[in-house]
Image 1 (tube, one colour):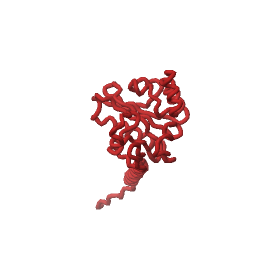
Image 2 (cartoon, helix red, strand yellow):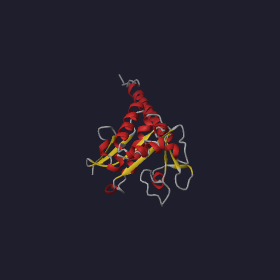
Image 3 (cartoon, rainbow, N blue to C red):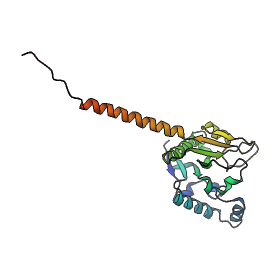
Image 4 (spheres, rainbow, N blue to C red):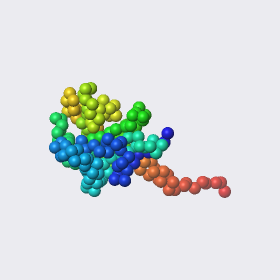
Length: 212
């Protein structure tokens, strides 16, 4: 099975699962969300939110495909672009972090590592952009049926650490500085290796003396 991950854009937004395509749990403040739902404008609001973030900040989501079939997605953005984040009891999000909001894998692809691949794609993108960490509010309640908040157990399984405890909505964090340091170390090692090869290649060759 081939897998590929691409950025979420206005052109492929409809590849999100139908219920997620029209969900504005994170994108709107609670009272505005209720109004949008009442007037049936949630899909337009989702599109407007994505357009705004793409213009002002850049890439803010990834879709994973399995054999060209949409298998899951993830969305993330600066906390200031996520109105719902202020409503959580474990807010605010740290000022040096980007907030991971939604992550969903289609049931038929569950257990295949798709969620981990999506988190890795987010980490790779944000590391290149100089972001220090990813944070997320986790769903730790076994009684909650919310699919809009990523399960806390999953976040822990892919490397997140709890930074603020709560029985239902803990806030978790994934440090990206390690990835940045590793990248810098690899680049430095390659530079030393190439420098050594260059020196050896240009070193003068000692003449061979032969008897007359």
